[in-house]
Length: 277
Image 1 (cartoon, rainbow, N blue to C red):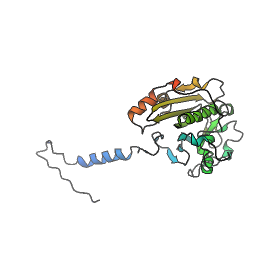
Image 2 (cartoon, rainbow, N blue to C red):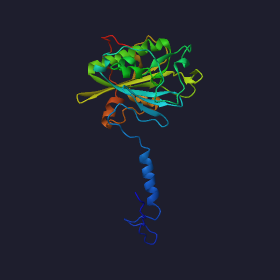
Image 3 (cartoon, one colour):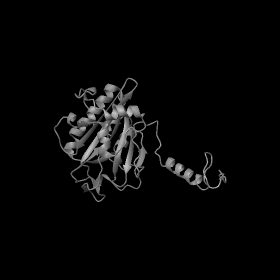
Image 4 (spheres, rainbow, N blue to C red):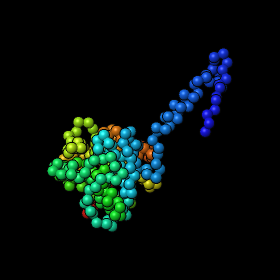
């Protein structure tokens, strides 16, 4: 489009109701366009996605989306919708961790975790996205793991994953966002200086015409025998800790309900089925 020469009408240097000083309109338009260009676009096809984080890269895989933070070499979050149907395994777990093929610049390999004393802990667990061979392979991308204490990964974190799958079965579908709490000064492992998070979080939301509810969890990266209820918080509390804006694409009224309210009685806390890893 060719630029048009705009010559605002000026009356003795004064600005009338319909007059703009020369040289003001063009910079103002550029400023407005710049602001709009940096505003994160909403993705109505993925309402579970948090607001993009500056400097991080959002990758949409088949089974989940991940926000990869190159400064920390870990994900800020992974997000996905979990339906009751998707919790039914149709393929065998492969246990083969591989690089995320989209993150071609990443040098992290499974060898970075070897003899480190930490598990490659899933963020989106394999059992949540085991409905096809492709999604099973995706669940073992290194962009979907973080260093976890073995007793944590195989203990209370596993119990929370099983509980979320039960909620997906009970409510037919839930939105899940999970990840490590990233901050400067964390201890690191391997030559690639992968930080070891002190805490992990998970937020779950149920949003349908029949009702809405949300819940968050903040768990220390250590073994625990305490009940999961002990770590339940509002989603707003997780946002305050992480700086992540969850479910920003949803209407403000919906966000107010699912993020600020914590109704423990709205969720079932007794496992009635066996979860899978």
